Image 1 (cartoon, each protein chain N blue to C red):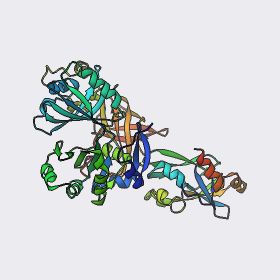
Image 2 (image 1 turned 60 degrees about the vertical axis):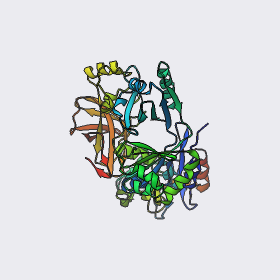
Image 3 (image 1 turned 180 degrees about the vertical axis):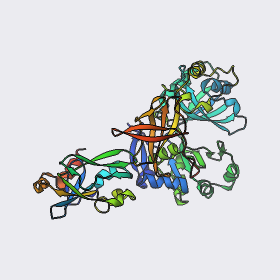
Image 4 (image 1 turned 120 degrees about the vertical axis):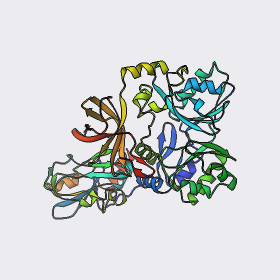
Length: 361
Length: 129
């Protein structure tokens, strides 16, 4: 039995092609994935991300619990509304999920986790929470809309109240604020400026329509994937999973090693993996015809690797990919990918190809 | 429901064939096929002069979603390819039976056309997909 978000009818109305996405009927595109991609890079687009899982952590131990649960340190969150990207690991140092944590105060945090991993995430979080004075509450009813692109904020400004606008005006990246019924955050998954907005389900369809009327282009999961890949952002299940450590998934920056006594889950395993030396996640660029796809073998002087996700980059006009390769494979070097029985030269770069509408290659 | 013109012949592998007379046919992929593939980003076409047997893979349509082989619906020699697709692969999406044509074959055996599906037969075949 598949789930539908409260915006299902709006998607159908807009001509969406609906597909199954881990048990959710979601729009893959509304006609052209590439046009939706360009809308986000050049103007403003929006995604229904209501399928994502919101989990509120409340209680006297909320802070110490999260300091145990995730690799990044929520003690960094000093200001109300500040958000943090982090991994949640198992004892072996593998990534159970990647998530964003918003800080309201030291007894109230909000996590947004992947819907594809919802069941195991909730099981894991509840299991770990047993010995802490916290409550773990899923908020399944909220709708969530990501409005992204260079003109997204000014378009949102035309449909929210002056009071709400005053609260978000000038808000730095990775912050969130409760503005009336809307929780508005300066987060996203596209490499563009914009908001992710959590709102009551009964208001979602009207809000979506107002965004359309303000000139925001609905965009589907197809464009969401090409945008995040161009931005060098990981997708759980492809670029990392429970068998992969954050060290091998370009997530080392989300590990807070200090203070040394903070014993987050997976820390011991990570220390060992770090000593042994780990594979790394890099970017690949192929300027000739063809499209790099996940699963393709990468051949480097330092050994073999694999493409974890690949696509045609609509912004660049050629194919880019993320690949897990041996530590010794150097940035700037040329390696080979086995495609359709042929070996093709590709260039190794840092994962991350486009930011704010422009190539960073 | 996608468009399936009645004046064309079809292969169950989603190519269409238009008989141009003079023993030459034009080949493309159907509207249904382009819909399944999504936005086209590259089309790798054969060279003029290449010869294929019916069923040979002879081109690759690469979309945002996947790379798909395109098969010669009938045997023949390639006499023209749609060079416009080099710069405008999206023509395969926007006009699959027109500007999105792929290549033209000089038929080896015109009777092979009789082995292809008509519009009704193709419609039935995609219903079963």
